[in-house]
Length: 215
Image 1: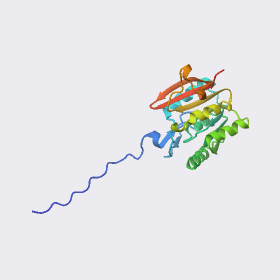
Image 2: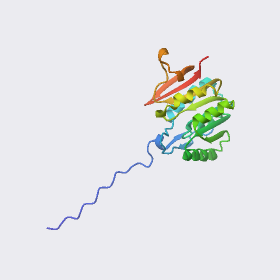
Image 3: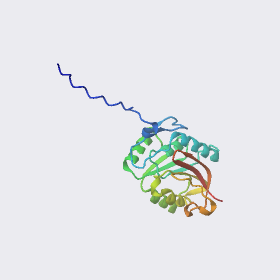
């Protein structure tokens, strides 16, 4: 009886070239560069703000600023993909300073800046907290500060008090975190003292907030 030829190994299942949008790229959702894709590096702690969340957040900010970006000085302390900073620049912010500590991230942000000819964007490599302290000591002030750090390293608790000395009067802080930043009066941590949460929402495990200084 003839022997059967060995069976061919099963082909591996095809994996889509383009995975979930947020894992490879996000898009600018408004302004001059609307729909422009921004690539996202596979880097530890890099977690870009999803398009849907950014749309909500920028609607909040537009409401607070009467949609006027022309005089807005913006600081993005944990820039990552640049989704927040380039979104603000696309909408006409006067200046956007992006800070990150990872060399490949900085290189990618610079490449995006060149591609967009984003003259209103400045990119700095450095420790976010050290940059914030230095800027405050030089008297620099901003109208809007983005805080979207890695969640597990207590960056929000350390960065938010520094923002008090960086904000213009009436300025706003956007903060993402793994926990809600709204506390009962008798349970408010010291680092949240003096801050008011004016808008807040949640998407999956992400809590996002718009803050201002209490009067």
